[in-house]
Image 1 (cartoon, rainbow, N blue to C red):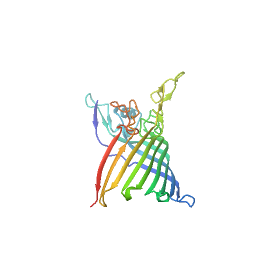
Image 2: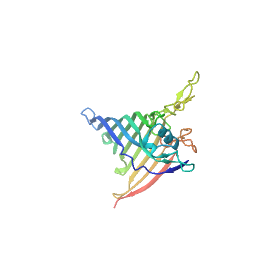
Image 3: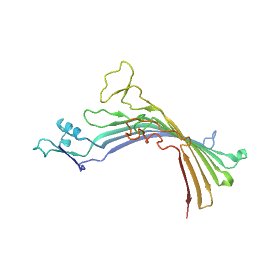
Image 4: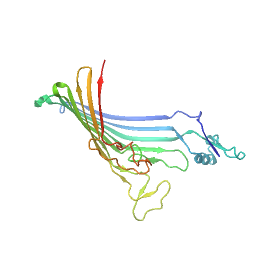
Length: 274
């Protein structure tokens, strides 16, 4: 049987619905220069465009899906049968979570020191990230906290900046990137004794835990003139080794979508305005 890779002119637009609401606290009288916000989001996407493998298309056609049958020819003479490998509007996505943001600015002149210090924090708690292939015989999967994917349950960025040093020319920033712990796969059943029979959708695993990580970055800028600014930055200052994630990348066994896979990195340059 031949496999022909083609497009699908019958695809429909993906349809998304985004519900969100939040609360903002901006510089209250009891905490000047302090800001805080929290936002809840609920995003649903239907008619998601996804691809099927040839066997899935054949199975769906036998199950009576006429749309897929139009892409399959399996009853012709030998050598003429084929499957059109193309995309369909079967899948759906549903993501829910909460975003947090806070900032505080402190004038160091009140303490006899130059410049100002800014503390800032951003965090996201992903409650659910459900992907449904929409294909008979498959089940929806939970992506939140799946460290082989791209959506940890918790992630945060915290930074501390001090600007206005050396007569207002120098600024330094220390930041921390945090990723919460998760699992190798939410669909796996962790057990060590009396394990249930594994299935293709829910295999068993001895240890399903995947650790989180913290990365520290440091950078600085120096205003040489009004038009010229020099900068440098060191990412992953402690040169923390990446967490091994088997089967995510068969060559490296790493997941760069979640963990730092490079190590300590140096950058330097000059910005100019004309």
